[in-house]
Image (cartoon, rainbow, N blue to C red):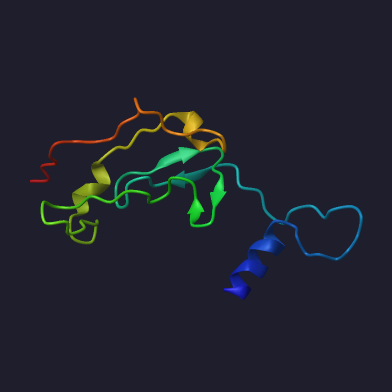
Length: 111
């Protein structure tokens, strides 16, 4: 885990050399894909806040059957065809779902 944190820090320019001028980042992310529903089609976003579990909303939900068993592309490749939409403001730090926000479906037929 320490190696991963050190690597990420070096990519983002956090080498910690103690200099007053921060070094330039070694890499810049211009866009990234977030997968709100695991195994479904991703959403390309220009920004995504980082939480303690990773990018906000990434793999936050999972398709399950009536018995609560998870479906993934390994079991059901057609999940890659399911498109997910979220409002662009969902990827800002201050956005929170409202009581009027929803996500749901009564069934998903992958035949």
